[in-house]
Amino acid sequence: MRGADTVAELVRRQWGDHRIGLRDEHHALTHHQVAAGAAARAALLVDLMPPVPGGEPHLGILLDNTPEYPLWLGAAALAGAAVAGINPTRRGAELARDIRHTACRVLVTQRAHLPLLDGLPLPGVRLLVTDTEAYEELLAPYGNARPGDAQLGPVRPDSRFLLSFTSGSTGAPKAALCSQGRLAAAGASLATHFSAGPDDVHYICMPMFHGNAVIADWAPALAAGAGVALRARFSASRFLADVRRFDATYFTYVGRAVQYLLATPPTPEDRAHRLRLGFGTEAGAVDAARFRERFGVPLVEGYGSSEGGASIQRTPDTPTGAVGRAAPGDDLVVMDAESGRECEPARFSSTGVLLNASEAVGELVNRGRSTFEGYWRNPEAEAARLRSGWYWTGDLFYRDADGFLYFAGRTDDRLRVDSENLAAAMIEHILARWDRAAGVAVYAIPDPVAGDQVMAAIALRPGEVFDAAEFGAFLAAQGDLSTKMPPRFVRVMEELPLTATNKIARAVLRAAGFRSPDPTWWRPGPDTAYEPLTPTAITTLLATYTHHHRSPSYT
Image 1 (cartoon, rainbow, N blue to C red):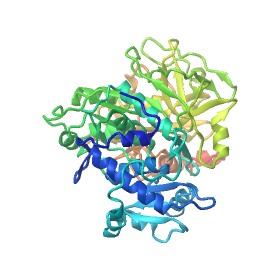
Image 2: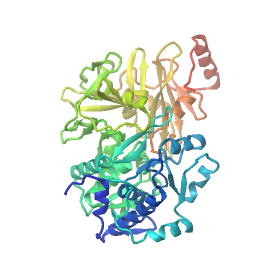
Image 3: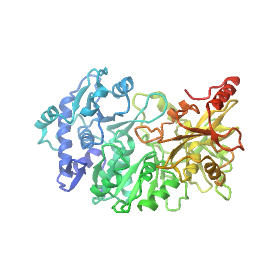
């Protein structure tokens, strides 16, 4: 396929293509209609954003995954505007902050989200409500617009296009910048890597305000001339029905979406579809194997942030559990942030236990070229990312002697148990093997004396119950579970708390600690069996923390 320098060029290419290009439950648009719809909205946008001193060509999109979302992405590309994806799970002052921080002059939304905006101080922001007659009337005069007719200024590869909020668990989210050229190149790269073509259909069920859906699903579809099918919000129970209805061939996932798909009841039609590939992060080797066995679909785990600072590519010889090697042009190393030295290569026992976690696990750093384009009006965050001229990802990894990289979680998810550094993701991948578990989250709670203790939240599969003796026997049988890894506390939940991007809301779990409303089990000593954590035991535990002047939970 011929490359494109800008997203605008990719949108223009759809003109005259009368194959179905965009679908959801209620709509079916050809590629030509998508280009025409984007052109109409671009012309409207130009009229709504006259040049004003200090005014940025920014619009916010506060929508579910409706056809209006990709239409407005296309409109922004054609007009030379930038889009801020607004997270609908944000509330009140935080939501208003996101809209104001990204200098949005226009906010595109839908009636279902109007209560979120009620009473918010948003001076100078023009509101467009897509599912109303007023919106249709406003758009009608621009129905004959063609791509390229209306622009706010020159559209170049370096034109600002996305302001993607990061999903950090602490502090105000940062808006990562992405230019038209970078997104067009990323789309083309993924389309080539996965052999995507015009006959493919990309199913977008992850929220489009998040970088994953736009960068890893919409952009490669645009680059390949493939169709796009939308699900307004992720639904595990409707996934297979959608895949069959839309004849989808490709999808992306983030966080625990795969676990929720595996938790649905098996049916004889689990393999009755045309799906050939899933691409995403954090599924884990166990769930990826289960998914392929059940649905006949390989999952390709990748690594790449919306910031564009580092990328890892999987190759056919990638070992089980590894993500892959550094992408061409990247010089990726695992660094000890405290000492500034490169971490030792990982050493494994014959059963796969990481023998030198404290020396091998560190932060992934790109010492080579980086496509990171900065954060919107946040020089402090940029400086934290770019230290010593290198890009620091904020993610934990370890690397084996052959250069393969293994994901070990976020730097915020590191635990220190008895002076040994552990990574939550490594423990989670092991606990996920337990047949009764539908989802697992591992996190730290403070030890009464120093460091951390390991706590796990486990969501059980439908109809299952927590058997403490069986769980203890399972842990003892895992050859790669080191002595510091078994959780002291186990919280049994119906489902894990998730963020809007299907990642575990660890801050919620940490804040509760072992004083949770759910049934919780614990081991009073390192060699004892699990037993229920009773109110009496909690009182005794709290006394030990008070004695050592430590807080038992992150509040």
